[in-house]
Image 1 (tube, helix red, strand yellow):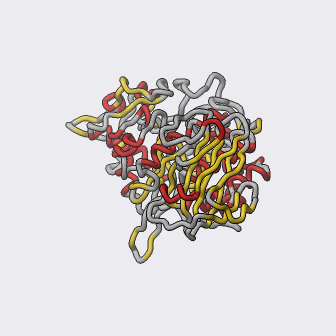
Image 2 (cartoon, rainbow, N blue to C red):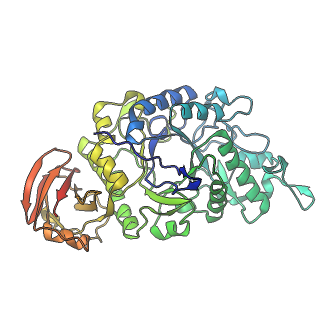
Image 3 (spheres, one colour):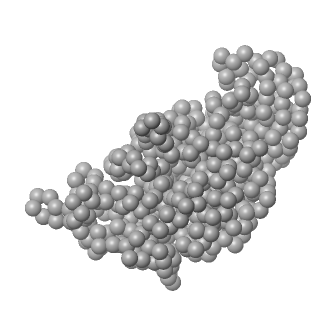
Length: 482
């Protein structure tokens, strides 16, 4: 069965705008496979494959991750200084050696057009504030509305007038710093940046170093206001990174974005996967899944899926190695992401997409849960091995057992068991306890069930649901208990 997802962008019916980001966005991001060195040729080749193989499953965004403006030269790295391309107004422009169609001030216009012709939507990664390079050059600020230098109080304003040098990006301190959004000139600079992205045909902006430890409510508000006014081509607004993010932080920017990272970078290591359980639980418990967002809804983002053929963090080498997670660990990641209704942004090299990885990211039940399930939350009433029950207070440890529950469009119950232990573990839940997590549901004392990853039909289960789960693995049940 194939799932054809509704578009995540708002659409128009009888002249009225419907909800924006009504479903968790899906797509492909270049970071896990290319880090920052991807070229126009590689990107468009990847986009073509996404359009042919993944778009029918709802993966509609293709996103160029960070440093598309950095020259790929010797000694260039993620925090190198003086190696970026900016225009006369201090705005980042694509490196023409890697993005030849950007020459002549075209930016990403031609790339976006080609992506749109494939039936996809185009996204880019951008950094907070203003670049050190623009500040060092003290470039003029562009007034987007007047199409010339920003002028106020009888003078032209420049980069050094709006930069807050005391607030650099925590993980790229030589690259970018905050902008003073209390100044009209600061707001004008941010407006000129993001209106330009809209003019290029961008559909998705991943705004980095503005959330988590670097939370900048002022900048997020300004950028959100720019995108709020985009009616001809609505833009999905994504915030990153999410290091040390908590629900109260997300509530501060409620209604301003469509997705926001809630963890640091997720790579293909088991500790990275295990660290997501408690964070996902906390955001679900705070009712943040599908809560108010920019012109619609917003979604806590557990980060990209580093599956398939990859590179390394901070690398200047393209995809060259296989994912280090075991197959059971990969199933665990896909299941948790779906049960938490996280955006699904695949990061592997789609040009070398193997059948196993393809099957994981296009599993119809996983995609159904991710888009259309309800009542998503951690389910604390389980027992597993020597660890016993793991209630909501369980920490983000690499041991123990965890469980999530959700409901489907046809009245089915999704129940996921997760084994974070280093050995196979028997996990069980009493059917009577399902009702504790689903108040108002009238359930039978027995349930018919199927486990999705094994395909095993468990038939009618009396009083309890139980199974053995492999090390770092999971079991995903579809239950009919009515």
